[in-house]
Length: 92
Image 1 (tube, rainbow, N blue to C red):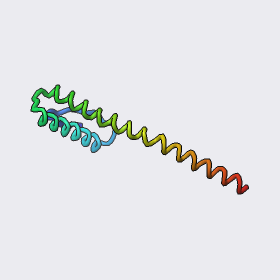
Image 2: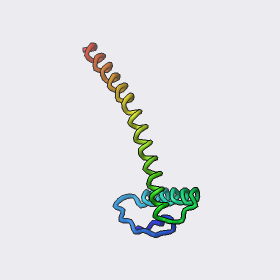
Image 3: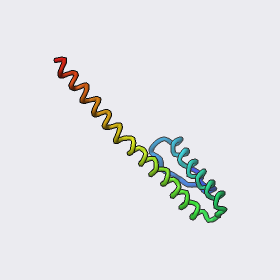
Image 4: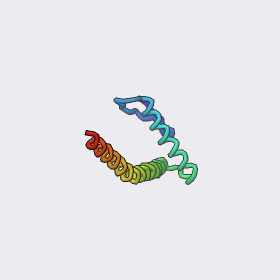
């Protein structure tokens, strides 16, 4: 399939959902345009690298937040399971 990112066309082999790939391409295109506008940079390679850094920052921030939430959530689930197991043992 063909996608356009920052006025360039790319042929992408997608074994999956084409709409999802188009969404990904639109996101990258938007990030590149946002960075080009903010920095007034015209070199597409530099814009792409800065966009990659920006997207990676978003990813790592979300991973960090997920990790921070998973620990306490896992502990709560384990406590709930233990309480249910004790209740089941007492009812037998």
